[in-house]
Amino acid sequence: MRWKFCGGNCVKNGYQNNGKQRYRRKHCNKKQQQDYNYKAYKPQVNQYIVDHIKEAAGIRSLARLLHISTTTLMKRILKIANKIIAPHIVADSIYEVDEIKTYIGRKQEHIWIAYALDRKDKSIACFAVGPRTNATLYKVLGKLNNAKCIYTDRLRQYKSLIEQSIHKTIIYGTNHIERNNLTIRTHIKRLTRRTICFSWKATMLYAIMKIYFWG
Image 1: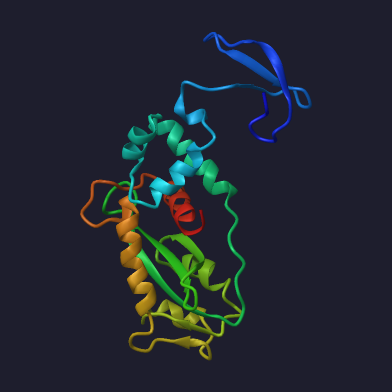
Image 2 (image 1 turned 180 degrees about the horizontal axis):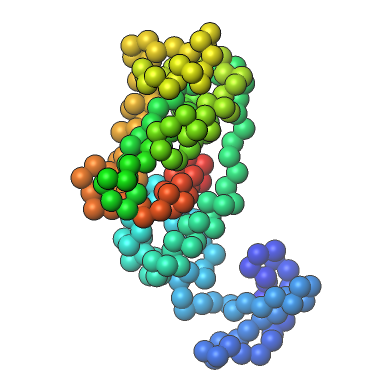
């Protein structure tokens, strides 16, 4: 029996309460089973979660597909998101910045997803979730200090947060990110217009977007 995480050797260590053989890792004394009845313990579940999130599966629909509880699924999503490392910001690149509006808990509780799109390879450089304030926008724009040029719409907050020499608001300047907004709303169930799926907490919305962008 090989340890599922590092591939080291294991030895038999009695039986579980369900009657299945238990194994122990010699080096660290951690224990495992050869197979599990509950689907959440299977090592490939995390990748299934990432793949389904990117294909417009909501929490309950994903829990039904994977045969695991919604509580376990939400905890696993947060754990997956915490392990994802944000990419390095490329200097002297051209970025487009925009926001996507959604809500938390109820439609009156508005929240925005602000993010920067690299115009060259269409990758997401950074993003932030929060109210439409300077503080939220600065979490994105503050990381683009070495940008060659930043295209935005005519939202007035951008004028005070971006250097005038690299800030542009020309017509069609944000075509790529506006089109990407439509793709995101198509791929993320909780951002689809006229849907009953939504986020109860900003932390879960942030985790979902982190998995979608960089997972």
